[in-house]
Length: 406
Image: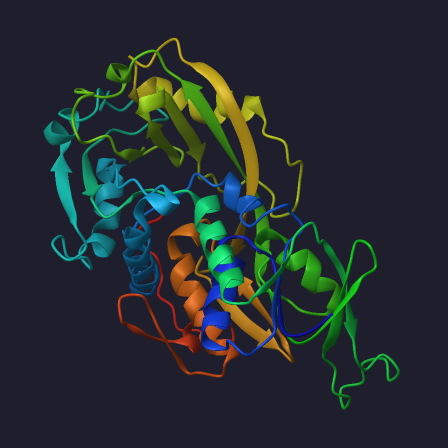
């Protein structure tokens, strides 16, 4: 039970780190642990599993763009479906977003601006405002965006990790850390570090380096040992609607354009699975929802109160649908910039704070974290871009404000 590296959390982030670290250090003994029965079975599996490259932040565009480049190569292995995004803006939102949009290149970043008429050629939409719902003034059709299976992606990394000699232990829930320096009560002149971790059955795992990639659980794991991770959990809920006919949503359901849609009210978004007559809907709300591990069950009243009125306004022909699926998970938020964190104290590194974009940035984050653990100053991403690893640290952070927030 002695390892060079122990990675706790086999979601899409932890599995990616494990694979890239083992690829670089094939003689090292590396263990990947998770409390679930397989890789990606936690919050990764509860995501809407959409990906996009459409960010104003250069850092986010690099992380997402290089990751998408890798995912496109995997294709069907990760159920990748480039359906695109149609991001809708009210007139006020459009004016407020111009600073972010003007930082992007329509050709390089693969998007087009649509006016109201062009939007109406795609969606059977009510574009008029009626308080509290704003108008639909313009849209951005993002072509390098789509749907992917987060669980399949995590399992891909975990499988590749195992194939090159990595060790995996599932159904292993880490409960506590063993620290050195206990005899001196962790006096500041003592060299305090992690010597081991203990699971739910009191098994102890010893290691030289420890990586915590447990997403929303990072804070609860690290706070008791005196680490402020900068990462907090927030509940997110998704609902599946069975619809009678895609024509209630689309002007031409035979068209190749069947995008995910971001509406201009309440952060409501739609992921269409039209071959099964299903719409997955969610809401990127803000004030009022606590930053803590709360009731893990989805709340149908949340759908009826916060999401359904938005759908009814913008899609008045979307009728007789049935609420057939519901589930909940947690985003691991990093404030104030909502950009991932890779930071270390002693021999412990934590990787998280993906703030809802973990799947779309996982490949880059895995490569960057693996480079940091090896002591490198730069990581080489999937598209060949060199990325300075300290940019995602807390101490030497260099990230930009995101102007395009759902």
